[in-house]
Image (cartoon, rainbow, N blue to C red; front, side):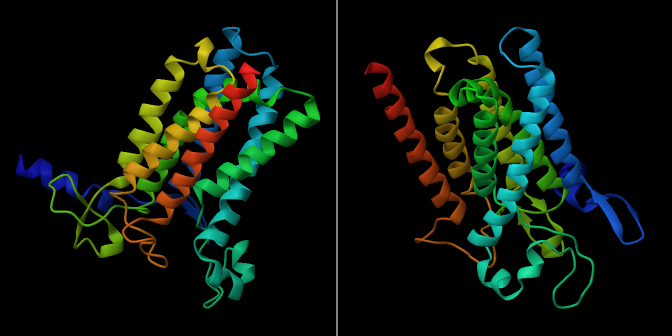
Length: 278
């Protein structure tokens, strides 16, 4: 038992964030998990089309997801810049898109993404796509949303494999050692908690009820409410960003954004219900 616990707690130590590198170029697990998430979502929605649960071609579906994916990447990046480290990027604007360290000039890659910024970017991409193709935004969101948490699961696994966004210090035996602490402090594997709550749990709920008539037209609002609740809860185990720390007492910035997301979802639900009644 002790040997297993020792192995478990040191799992991050045995994970190399890089899959391979050629010279100064490297390809890591984090980027790979983004691609896996994209194709998992595509595969699930393609299955829905085969089951007659959607009305669009496979090519149109792929184009839609690609637009949303690009929107999420761009929105996620600029969300991180604006929300999480604006003073740094204001002083070093080229660092927003440059893979080189602005101080040392070393190749370090582009890192730093915001989920909430990515969500805004994806929604903007979706809105542009439906306007261009004369589609119904709410019907399309009903079709797409049930598959989204499955993709997000792999995003959080990517965080874990990358050894980032780890949790707070703990004395619990299920804590793990992460490299940022030089393996000296047990921390909550909060990435795995988020993968389970925001990925597995939400996916099972939305996929099971994907064809429920009373949910039709409300999947986006329900996702905003459901995700924000799961994210707010899991953030109690997550270490806040070092450059920000806690805000409004003992809350993280992610929790504040999740509260805003929750209330937006509730407002949209009531608006949709009132619109239906009228």
